[in-house]
Image 1 (tube, rainbow, N blue to C red):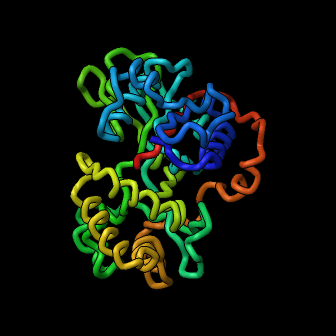
Image 2 (cartoon, one colour):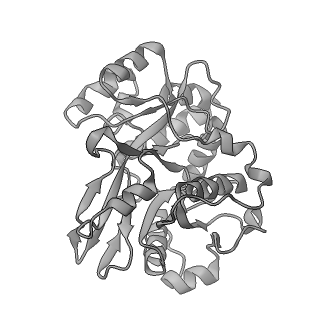
Length: 317
């Protein structure tokens, strides 16, 4: 769930409102004091009363909490579509998200946005939030057997199709359908996979991708893994994420987190050339930095495009 600082919530809200979201909802499972004063229609505090109404009690596992929130968000949606993304994920590309949702025929129940993982250039420090210069895309399953080991010697076994986070991406679901079960990355209707359009492979070279800031900054990345270590919540983490956590624990004990961070989230010139050759890197991502500078002081947000959907944000810890 969302647990980070208030300005991350504001950046998320501002970004998706500019994309044309009719409503943005962030389900906040952290210290409520951090978001006190935020619009309660946007930031929903996941306190004891909230969990009692949604799930009877607060689920112990973060993925179960996320599913409960997604189900609640879908059941209470008033727009045409609901976009399910984490608070560190931003849909970007052309045409606009609003246009893609509007174009979708009635036979389409779901629209997918494939992952593009934010990484830093060697010239960066990694300490500037949303300071990533490039976005690496997932490779094919066949290629993933060898490519990560070539590009990231010694840590290639941590990668899932060339990414450290999820490679599946996230999705939007048409609102108002019966029998819908919303999952973390996919949804089903009457226990059957939904009819889906991949917005990352649209005709005429158009595409929408999901920028995933798996490491917003060195500081945020360290805090994320320290929370995971503290709660030891690994039920649905996946084998490779468990390996990442074990390696972080080892480096954390030796005060070498930054060394590991650079190995995982920085790309050098030769790696970048390789990724370009294979078409696995995007060099122009979402405009996050421009919004970061004034997010803390913004009281009102500019209107977006034609309003077609809701964005639901949560951050997995």
